[in-house]
Length: 110
Length: 523
Image (cartoon, rainbow over the protein chains, first blue to last red):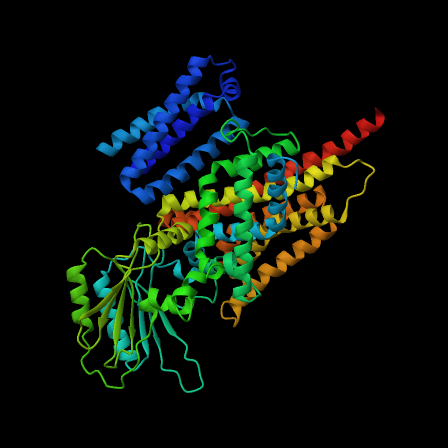
């Protein structure tokens, strides 16, 4: 379950990384992001990525690091494909990802 | 040397990559499949599918059963071997090796049993997933040492290509998710970059640790300096559990195996066992070796407890607390093989392996594409370009087709046939040879499309062939919770879908090309 939360967080982090880039933001929302917005996305992305790493490592140092590399690969692949073929899906991801991460977290504490 | 650092690195990346790309494609492809070695073996033996994958009996019960069986069946054997079932392999295997007659080589007598009911199961003769595992580093039809040297060299080239690739890719972070479709060789470059960058830590890790697995072939000098007999003697020292004790020729009437097991279970209650081997079970020199199963720790060598068969005392423990250097070495091998992975990580490994395959395939194709694009329409292709194009088609489309042929042979060859396992392998290589011959003749878009369609059909019909020749199918696997078999079928269907999509894409390319040529002529 913790690894699932970490995977969702990682996906969220790379979504934020993608939205921090002007061409991808434009493909998703149709407008250019201003610099502060890009910077905010970038900071959020790094925080989430560090959280992902922390969560994985807290489970097991070696195994967690391997999971972390795999999760990053999965996240980049998914985003690469979505951005290339269905960029507007990222708009849904923007709400869907935090919601599922929250749901998974709540379920794991039960 | 070229005039600037960047240019020389590009040159290095291109040529180092191209030289070994087809071999690396084979190594990566077989390696990626090897992450599911046990699952492929399970699929290849439909006789096992009726048996439950979950084991109810305790390890102690299974061991007692194994000991009783060996005691009555082969008391005077040279070795006993009991393999306990695991999550991925539901079989209890009880084997013994008779003493060899002078001038002959003894062979193991194996009994595979269903873990709970203890009913013997005879499976068809097949290499299953082990074929791909061996193909990954021993290749086939050649001497092992030569093959390993070749694979070593290829991995070294891969490492050089990876590092030079990182150097020349200036926009790793800027273009991380970039994939622009329908832009000719630009799209291929995007695909190449995306597949490399998304699993970059994995690619570096797997290539480097791959070299480490063969390090004693590549770099035997430290062992040769320290030990008189070199690597051989070093291995003796590093793996004491692999040494066989000398027979004492003094009979052992009451062996102390039960006391040893009790001692083990009392002192290491949490440690699951993977197998037990006993050397000379009826001799006073008998040694019982208990191999502990590695769980998700990053280590490769299993811990072994060696007990005296005569007194039942613990003689030695091996790999229980390794030195830092041994831990590093074992850790790297464990990371490479991925045996430690549970289902989630295994799938991530598989995904990264596929990304590696995509990286190599797009790299090979791109070289040929670029040369073609630079050529004038009147210019005829050079021999080198033709060779690369043919090899690309033969390797990239031929290998999946050959893999499908291997699985068809597994289901369609008569079960009791002698030499069946080798015929499956023959089917694999014959199909690949046929694809290569085809590629030598038709290496244009039409050739790619034909082989893509052949692949699509082969992978689409594989689950059907499985359903017709065995008692299970996609629906029954899902209802019984046999997820390994279920996912095998799903992956075959997914592969078919990808190849169909590819053939459709190629068709549209084929149609637009003559139109474009006509338009250019008219202009």
